[in-house]
Length: 280
Length: 219
Ligand SMILES: Nc1ncnc2c1ncn2[C@@H]1O[C@H](COP(=O)(O)OP(=O)(O)OP(=O)(O)O)[C@@H](O)[C@H]1O
Ligand SMILES: [Mg+2]
Image 1 (cartoon, each protein chain N blue to C red):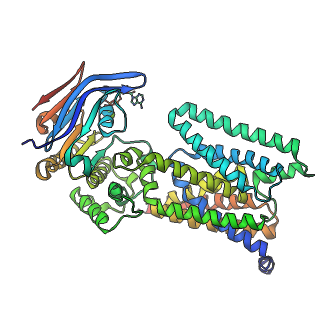
Image 2 (spheres, helix red, strand yellow):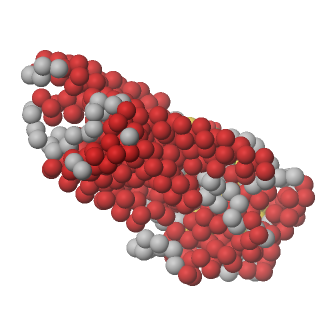
Image 3 (cartoon, rainbow over the protein chains, first blue to last red):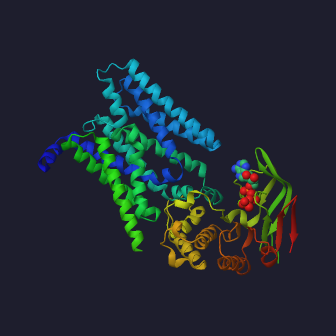
């Protein structure tokens, strides 16, 4: 099995897939805590459906690089949803639900009507759950993925202290002169970008798992924001690598395998958290 | 012992889109004063705090900060929000976030920010628990952490929204002593919401009471 793996690693597309996977996993884990605690998880879910709709349009248009359309559409929706959610909580939630189910339904409809593909069900399935085999990306998509994930990581590092401040206590941040509105928009844009990236790896239905599980696991054991962030990043990268490497010889779909690894680690961290608690 | 005027509220109407909570609220706060804001639940004390901090717009009237306080920032201790309850953050991280106003264009905290955070943790007697998780602290320790954070944000004015809510009598006493010493020894102006009927007469120089109408007293 090991020699099998080494065999696979000789192919450049496998190596690219692994590099892209690691970078996506790294960037997607960073905002997990913020997403969970700022009640943005719902927005994240809504956005992944929007991204699905955008992908449907992009694939019908036969673009070589889907992200060129999907990224701006999702980012714009993120900003709109954030503004809507801010104005009125209940209406904001309804707006998110409306936009996300509409995008899902229209996306499928468009694919159904216009797609020339012989295997429509397969296409839809892989958009929702990630590709069944190794992720296959065009060279331009690989480059874009790498650049965008590095930008996300850089933005997160530069704004780390502000993101902490705005997530922990927005009102205090405002009184201390931090432009909380601006940072909320930045957070929303980063989340939208992460969702589009993660979609390449696990498909649109499983994105939340990729974003939230590492953070939830880390929060079980670690107590400071920095430790949780670092642990979530390491965990996410490890689970993604494991998931990808297992899926090749096992012939399982990549996305669900990665998410299964995340779930397994969550269980491990729950137990570890209980143990450290009872010890102290 | 009043110094220069630092806060002027003129004819404020407090409230939100569909409710008016109080009208014609006018008062001025001078350096070194200790104000207690009292009144029943839901009368608008927190709303007044948010209005003077600029978090909520007054329906009418205006709030003006003068002199040094306008530049150096205000230390705010909010009534607990939901988000903080399960947030993974160490005490040190929470206190250090009080320095965010000093960041300017810098992305990271520097030496003097970290020293200030340490100093204020010592002042509040929480330097020995700086690595502990904020959400696992007792109510009294949490309030001290938030007060240390507020102190990082200001050397002049503290706006405290129910700093002793959920504290036992001993911790309440200690908290009041801390606040009083900040006022007396460090000359920090205090604006504090409290439900404790004795607090105004014991500690404050001024009281603003929410009742049928809003009244202010010098004590
Ligand atoms: N964002 C808001 N929008 C609309 N109404 C609000 C908002 N925040 C508070 N209120 C209402 O304003 C009134 C006063 O609230 P406020 O929080 O100022 O009271 P309080 O005096 O601080 O009470 P407590 O002693 O319980 O803290 C309440 O009736 C509350 O329901
Ligand atoms: Mg209140």
